[in-house]
Image 1: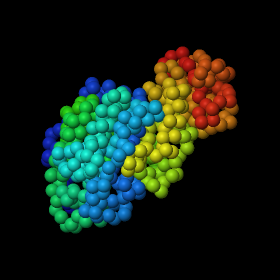
Image 2: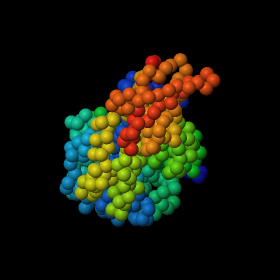
Image 3: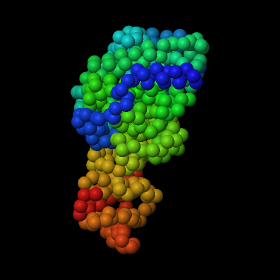
Image 4: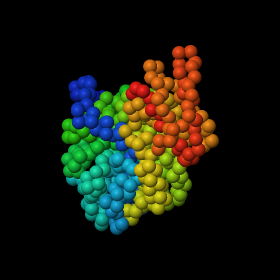
Length: 446
């Protein structure tokens, strides 16, 4: 613990005066935030040499493998069926506006050509191709925004010291003093490569500060030099958004707030004990089965209807859904994932106007479902089959002008008074069970 505090003190000095200054987003950054919120749906990709073992991206940690033996996987990584264009076209057909792909996970293996370390997909594998480079080109060709996941944790490097709560069995000598500043310089070098060599990057998606959560929350930015990293990113690409999956309230310099496996304000998965929701754009990341990286044993895929409803509920919270796929080691996307993505795409082709570019509705989640809104229109997403009516409070000074099903057929509604409040009671006709959408048009913007 003393070592962690010593690192915090060093990091505070290195961060300098920048950490004390308020972060002022650039105009380009604010525009990127607006586009991010408009998209509402993105695809998460967890892919690396861990896919070869078929037990998820934490296999080095969970199976207590040594780094020396694990790193030899790279010599056999040759995903002959990887096709970046095919991936991006699939995700575009699914209705996603962006992808977030693991450029480097906790195992320390980089999926891009890096001069900062030879332990990367170009230099250490027979594949010899730059995965991030090919995805960047494909995204630009298809008009898809590219976001990059980057791990703060590294289970293999000796300069990552003192260790946090993970990575204790990978063969690094216990008691090593390491060189924490050297590790931070390494991360800076890789972030500079990612933001210099691959065109426009929509966001850097950090993960792993929780590894040193023995230190108090207020110590975390200094330990990791977060403000320094954030400023570096914004300097290299002012429009690039910064998010950090630290499971804490947001820190200065971040542009989006991330929630893992839970909707904002909920904590069923246990990763969000701090339920403070910021005013930043919000994103929930979720798995399609139970795994992030490819897991050959995990065929427990959520149904397409479940995933569509989860997307709707996420939008109802004013957040984006970042839905994960874990490609196989040969570079293919598992067929159950493809089927669900295409089903979501077909639904969004038909009903996407109630999701894209909307805000979370002023009517909070109800037993029957959620709402989204844009301008003077409230989309009522009835997710519970058999609902006969929904009751909607009319904002003070406004008036409900019309109600219809999503495609325009009028439905009946009545109003009632309760003190100074007015409520509209809207009839729900038979409709799609997955999401029976009503469209309420008000006299004034909501």
